[in-house]
Amino acid sequence: MATLLDALNAAVNHHMAGHAQAAADAYRHILTAEPAQPDALHLSGVLRAQTGDAAAAVRWIGRAVRVRPTAAAPWSHLGAALRAAEMPERAEPALRRALALDPSDGDAVEAMGASLHALARYPDARRWLERAARLRPGYAATLLNLGTVLRDQRRFDEAEACFEAALARNPANGDAHLARAVGRLVRGDLRAGWEGFEHRWHRFASPPWAGQPPGGATILLHMDQGYGDAIQFVRYAPLVAQIAAQGGGRVVLETHLLLYRLFNHSLGRCLGSSIQVLVRGEDPPPHDIHCPLMSLPRAFGTELETIPAGVPYLAPDPGDVDRWRDRLAAEDGNGAGLRVGLVWAGNPQHRNDRNRSIPVTALAPLLSVPGVRFVSLQTGDAAADLKRLSGVAIPNAMERVRDFADTAAILANLDLLVTVDTAIAHLAGAMGLPCWLMLPHVPDWRWMLDRADSPWYPSLRLFRQPRPGDWTTMLGTAAAVLKAQAARAARRLG
Image (tube, rainbow, N blue to C red; front, side, top):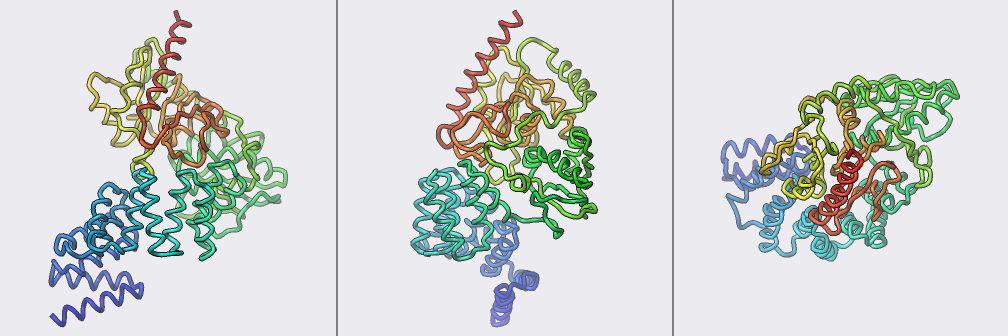
């Protein structure tokens, strides 16, 4: 027993000293000798949570609470790991168990607030996080979580105060800078928002370009966020090319393989200035200065009134458009009625996906509108969800799609796209095509608040949840508008 205790103490010492691999090895040796040792199970899970493997943390700590269900800390850490693994609905009961065992556990109180926030239960989340703030005054993570909930409740001044308090304790807190930036951007204070966004992670060590005359330098523009962000901000690439050309410089645009054909076709030659489009590799291409695509609005000092909203700035290859016209006609017989693309779910790995994606059963009012030929542009596992709806037969056009260039060609053959907040909405907007965007009650910052249009994409119409989780009201409104539009189209053809 003494030997096992000594081994556990040594493992904990490695853990506390930040020697992750040594601690992991020590915990593994203990569990080889005694597979149900609860402290080693628990702390192995904590170590995995600290190194970013939330799923493994859930497994290890889950074993610990089964072995010793009366200890509060493992339940608390299990709840936090479930929250980090994007399973807040499972986190809540684990955290309630932890707090029944130890009501003063500040970590559990904070994790409860964060979990309820992820479930869009904003008033409950705020109450728990205010309790956490009383338990641990000045604790940076609590201030950040509370500020984020207050921001999503549109209590912007109170949210800003939380972020300021966190930054007063640690001016280099990048998460606090980003959270404050989102609150400013969603209200339209773009200049202040862009500054805050500069605290996100940057990939390259080369000098940044921030709008200054580049001389004869080669400017590397590169993705540092998702596909939608790249599509939204690549609009600035031709503007950078114009500036570079004046001094004999050049622009290299590095992007993901799935965007390469689309960007190369649309931007490879623009306004007489060459943009070399490359697929992102392990090492950056040769360059003198660089700018992430999401930093371009800051470089150009963009405000609401100066957003470069000229569209289209992306376009599919005409040959692709013709091929997809034939394929879609083969699917729906080129019949009468509006051809409407439909996307109801985003990437399930997105941190806010449970709030932005629509349950397929909620689509019934939209799918019952007469005079509409729906085409599914849904990707991933959600594409199969339509089979759960009886009497619904909608072709899925994405089964033969290779990249965003193909998706753009499909969009060019539609009358309308109806979608949740995912990359295809940006693509339709960049092409200047009609798109209805279905937004949760708390939208992403770029869609701002309360407006039905977007200064970034003139062809978008925004439909918003009137309250958290209320897709029914919003989709009912969209179905009524679609019914009227389909009827007008039928009268024109008749």
